[in-house]
Length: 392
Image (cartoon, rainbow, N blue to C red; front, side, top):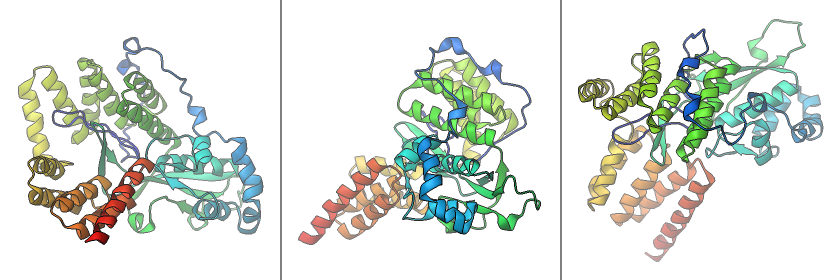
């Protein structure tokens, strides 16, 4: 359910998103945005892009419905049977892994995925079972992460399972609906939700894939995924931002400016598009226009994502570990669940010979890691800290 917004910040390329689905910026756009596409700049993608594969149901998924959870469906009904299958530790045993966004059959095959992958897989199951599905954007606090030189802004989506589509005995009944959410209930309880359509979910999926490809250096393929996201949902504004970043990285500055301006025309305080456009102005030598945008950004967001973290890193390089600890602690205060902030705070404490606090924050980093690789890294470092503590 976390999905990606791309941003260019400061002197580096900043931001997309893994994880769940981003904050949903949808504006009504009636025409296909073909004038934003410049296919001649890019070679054909390495593999075909087919929206119909996203919600495909594999033979293994059908077998799971027919055999593995058939008794639960008979006993509890389709909604509750599927709900329990997804949440029970004795059934699918799903794992959260933000490394990449997968389609429904791939998510089921590996039993892991980011939140958007898990929503898509759940929807595919539900539709196969004849249940109605409603996707929702959930207004949780914006969180940030990063990969390589890209920063990721993360929002959230979940879905509501309705009764079987052929059950017409009553109108839609909220109390017969079940919400499936892969975040802990306390994180989403009471939050405002906005219904979104499936075309937006498809655009989110494709926008995620574009961001993931961009973060691994596959700029050419990233273009085709971002392009298809706009074909699927011309109103999904983050895809214009994504396309703009791809053009910026490809040095097509005029096209990048067009994409960012389009987003800003429809959402004038869009910080991501604004920061990205400032980078384009700098590359074009339009320093005064860039300066004006940066001044506006500072008014709207005086302490941007990673502001304290970057100062902590600088302090670590200067061997000022007490100052680094204080900067990292400030970042942890506003994003306590982001693993990298906890990891660096642990390192600062380690350098200050405070093994107890180092162990505490390394354990939090491991608990909040979003990929298997990160979890293994933090677990190994925590083992080392535990061994040091035993020797003291």
